[in-house]
Length: 238
Image (tube, rainbow, N blue to C red; front, side, top):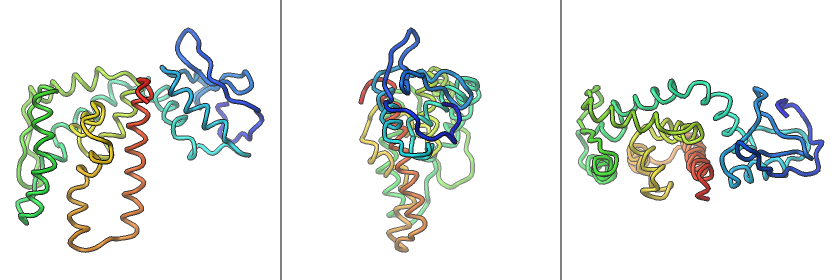
């Protein structure tokens, strides 16, 4: 099952529980990752989504149509082996977080950024215990080291499945704080994604829509939603 060139040979993909968690079996044969590790996930709900992807395969396996399988593979084959490195990379977003870099004009954009981003900074201070400070312009301005340390510890505390989801939530949005807000279900994913796109939406309002940009944005949005769903399923939150 590690060979992504295979064609469907199985009748049924079924969830099975074992001593380490939940796996998916194809006619009784356990799926393995591309690196040939056992594909074992922490919840029945997540395994169910993976099984559903295998049950709808017609003909050749297409990894692009199996996002939950791919995310589970990434968690097991990649993040498990590089947990500290991935956590360090994501924690670094805190020192250059999207929502901290503000325009100095026009006033409409300044107001939109403040309306969308200030509440997130306040939430991070009250719930995460870390205050990040907004600045005008795009030049890097270092954040308080104590706040960054607090956020880094929280990132490193995430398990491999949570960190896999968190990777996409942060890298797609450009914001460590938005990533944490998604994990905490502070707002619906669609609202958090819209908050991460304040600048793009402003430009769209001023200059009109661009079909290619819209297509790319839609893909990123779907990937963001998937990451949120993957995290929740790894917690059996649905």
